[in-house]
Image 1 (cartoon, one colour):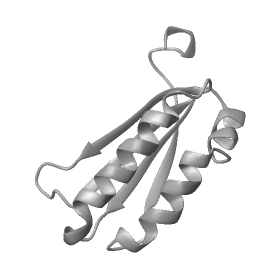
Image 2: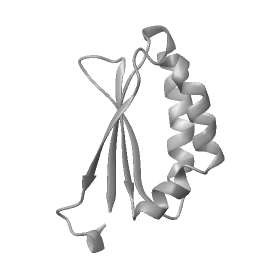
Image 3: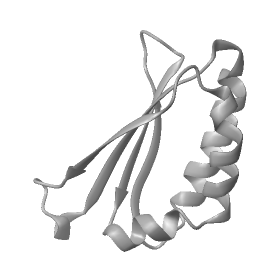
Image 4: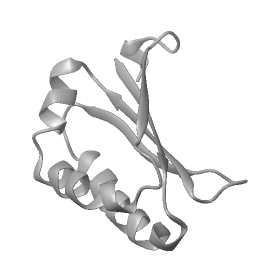
Length: 101
């Protein structure tokens, strides 16, 4: 498994547009064969901060995701909505084991 946490700080006036674009991306991403999870979460004490929690079966699944039209549409729309560049961390799975996902 390849696990990404993408952190996003959105301009306050762009919250609704960001949420709409990200929901569309997340819903379409979850339809991809190599995507195990793709969640959009909002920080409770700062509603302008979000995280995308993405779990891919392997590197090939991530690379395939980055070729999808819905990802390209999201990546084209979102930069102007951000208060700062997005960041990410990549994790490896420990428990439950990959076979239990």
